[in-house]
Length: 260
Image 1 (cartoon, rainbow, N blue to C red):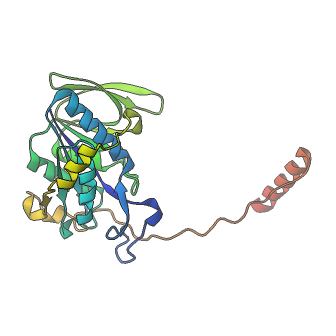
Image 2 (cartoon, rainbow, N blue to C red):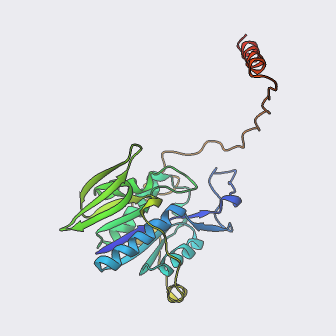
Image 3 (cartoon, helix red, strand yellow):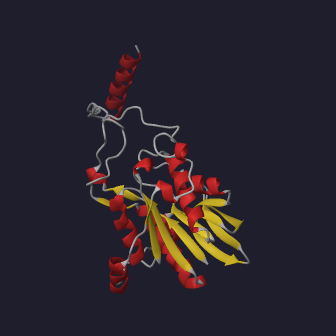
């Protein structure tokens, strides 16, 4: 079984900076980490390989520094990593990102399952995983909390819902987005760290993928951020003191004044 794990390197939440010209995140030179939800996808990909055989491949789209995320994935047990990096991809929204990653998956060709974290901490859209599946025209199951069984090219999974969970069966190949309840990511071993240190990460540019260039980057992004600003601080609230009857009267009078 061959598993592809799509991960994303995101800025440390304490060091987020915005480019005022493009209204996009500045990633170069910023301390970055693997998107927390993607750590669970990496772990599940490695577990599936350990149980069923095959290999686990990590991919990411980002600037050159995102190579570090792929090496961390290898230290956790992934076999290979591919960096999709080109100026042509800069400013991609979720549609352009999903398209580009899908083209990278097509270049890899041989896969049974694609795993993604349920969403990225810097965007919170939860759209890229489903976007990849749509571009590849394969089934998808989101918010997976457990992979119960994989047999005869059919996966049985538990999907988290607001009311509980659903049991879903899907044919392979498929894409699954996972939630943190699915596992506990391992700490890389010394052997894994040494393997990652020696790993060579190929970089694929737009010219290396069979892509339609008008669907890449800002040009291929139908959505964009028109303005980013820090909202003004909220005014201090009013604290009423006294007996319940008195505070209730004070609150009622305040609300009446605001309705006038």
